[in-house]
Image (cartoon, rainbow, N blue to C red):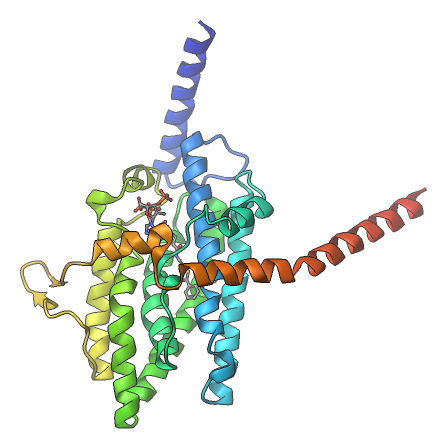
Length: 322
Ligand code: BYC
């Protein structure tokens, strides 16, 4: 009897919740929400935070080798921005009942996912341009949509992140533009980076809609506003035009404008490679986790000092009150 009443109450609450989402009223941390809504948001936001933090590694690799002071300053600023994005996102995720320590522990144990893209190596300077233009370009399409996501703390974090990401994308395009107008070797380096980053960038949008288990509910709850395939198509249409300005090509013989659809057609993604990377077997998965674990261990003295300082301040305050 008790269970039956409880279920009716949950059904009523779910209906009120859906009504609110449909009316575009943001869901806030203290509001009632279905447990699956909380879990999905926590999963996505924490994965997003991990992606920002792990995403610093491939670019951080080039800070000491940037070709000029200007490029070095830009790259340092960009990598710092990614760290900040990670922090806003961990804070947003914490409002859903998990602590940052728990989320970081999941990442370091290899339990939590982060974007597949950051498991590819950065082999030349041109990769910094390709990451900015293609990787941040893909990220920003997804993140502009997330500024309107239904969970308030996530949506608000995304507004600032998007402003910074648009600078990231432009600096990447500009770095490639300079290479594309340079020597024969620089042009070849630019094309090579585009060739290597194109397909992994398309994979960032996730599996095809037909293979995406989370999309249906995430669309219903307006966590996602566009499906993986819709965003991927939007990205292809945008990049297929921009690549012409660089005088470069995309490594896809099937890329062709389709008048009927009003979109570019493109070739099939290697899904086996995608799932392999997601499962931890990409070219740099082990290296990335190793670097994060080392950074965590090496930073333990900072955490200890922060705790000791907080305790000292609290004790001083208590003494003052007494
Ligand atoms: N990589 O049902 P689906 C940046 C997983 S960083 C790895 O479609 P969903 C930057 C997915 O998690 C910005 N895993 O899932 C930083 C799910 O597994 P679980 C990164 C992936 O969540 C530094 C399973 O596959 N952006 O900009 O509805 C330098 C089934 O997928 C991937 C974000 O994090 C992937 N690519 O949709 C430069 C955006 N794709 O969790 C730049 C936020 C899918 O069920 N995230 N999986 O075990 C999202 O928008 C969504 O989570 C996704 C996937 C569109 C990625």
